[in-house]
Image 1 (tube, rainbow, N blue to C red):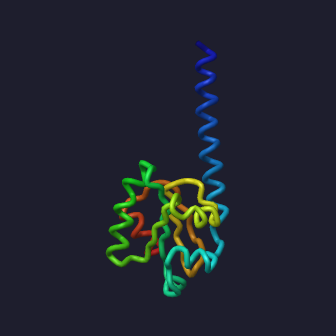
Image 2: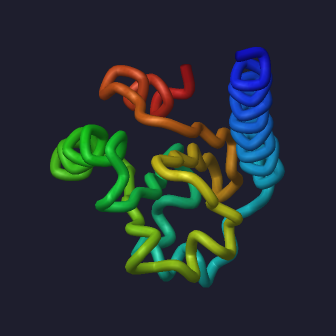
Image 3: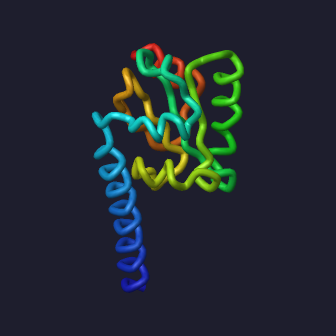
Length: 133
């Protein structure tokens, strides 16, 4: 019985370490500029260079993404500066930026990655990110 408990603890800490590594890896791109060719792949024009914007990376098979994608779609339809990237359809974009988890949202300000947020976010949180709060 003790062996099962020890195995469960080892598995739990292994999962936690993997999540921590994913988070730390995602923070490495913070402060980097978005390359122009990535801007073009995202379909973003020169007007986004001077404003805060969101780039949302998702996968259709991701559960949290399925709840967050309609929120991003709503922001885009309202004309908010946001773009979404299906990592299955555009793996080169995700790879160039080192995106390894979905959903991942980048906050870009003046073509610089200001924040990297892992996990699903509410509409309120996304609007606050756009305002810089």
